[in-house]
Image (cartoon, rainbow, N blue to C red; front, top):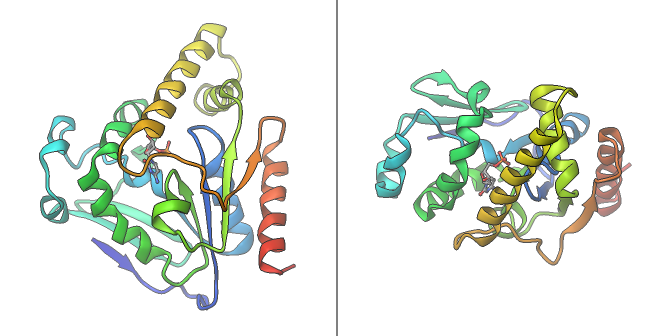
Length: 232
Ligand code: DC
């Protein structure tokens, strides 16, 4: 399932940075930018649970880890990029549709799916130089990561950012209310599930991005990484 070819750069000695937090807190975009600046790989672990085409929605619960291993899914890490292929076709571009988002909490709550993806994620961090974002990066996947960050923001600002991303700035109050409700439900599902729920681990540094610009939050995270690793 995984083809973690070594990157063209020297990977040895690099660190793993985890960024966990609730939906819409800016984890993925911040992690991507940080990886670009530091020339690390970026693992968007949420994307791994957004497997729309691979199995009909009702079918996930009944699958075992060995059934999942037989799916024609490939996670390929090369140079800077981690890409997913389903039946030889790259699927990254369709992962963030509303349809997939509505279903993803269910898929992510299933223990066999989490177990199936755990080894793959660990391998992606084996050589360091990785920025991994998600919900359980600091606790379950990379408990020994050198830098752990927990990104938060108010519910309203998280919903606004999601709407700006999907519909631009012309959204109505009603749309904002609906988006806040959707995010609240996903937060609850992610926090209350039995396996690998979203938690802030004790050794994570919390960064609240409610009042920050995107560039501002990237800058703060960069400082944290540099301070904790003694690099400039
Ligand atoms: O970060 P995201 O919105 O793409 O996450 C999609 C879903 O997957 C969300 O419901 C939380 C879940 N998820 C998870 O359970 N563990 C992760 N490491 C990443 C995401």
